[in-house]
Image (cartoon, rainbow over all chains, first blue to last red):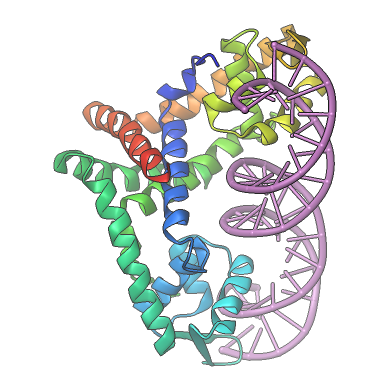
Length: 146
Length: 146
DNA sequence: TATTGTTATACTCTATAACTATA
DNA sequence: TATAGTTATAGAGTATAACAATA
């Protein structure tokens, strides 16, 4: 099969998308026997870091809309990883359970191994540049999207 | 609403995903009155660059599986942007039509405007670093996913 | 009036397995 | 046997609109 030319390769956004796609695939592989979806993992970790946060706050932190948080939280509760208590008539305080805290610790171990493997591939100053630039691009895009 | 701490922010893969997500949102906004989905646009551009390529070759170039190329190509043909001729009993050669070439030109104009806006936000040497590092990360992840 | 959580729904992309017809 | 295209189907994430209850 012939290898095609792909002018998209010179585009920043396209390279970001391609790299992200493969990194996510590796992350999913890392979680293959963990029985949690990526969005569930990130949600659990943020709740673990922020006891008594609300569902909306978590969504805000990880850029998941309120409506889409509902089934994620429901599944975490159903599996006994997160508990919630009512704060007032409309807000709920989220906390990880003991089982959830253990799961979070294991998730961090896997994530760190995954992260270390990638960091080892690039020079420290390159890593620093990338980690500095990505939030700038994100902020720029957020301005443009509005 | 309180702003939560998010330790994920230190992770390379997570920052990539967040930046990509917002950049894609802006790209979709750029295409909002263009009546083409992102995957259709990239497919059209690659066919435009590679006359008489096959469907599988395009999929290989832009990392879309054969099975998922089918409805993309079907829609491009249905809209008169791409034509195909049979090479042999199992292969089809793809070409953009005149209308497809015009559409591709317009797509490039929009993409370049989108790209220029982002590039202006970061220093040239930072841009160079990012564009050099992203393919390295992608290759690393591809090795790991296997 | 604005906010929190919720329901329902649709869209986009992705993944896999199995099939055909051809080489 | 391997390849090109196809079909069917499932999963994950995301988006919007509308609603109830509450602040």
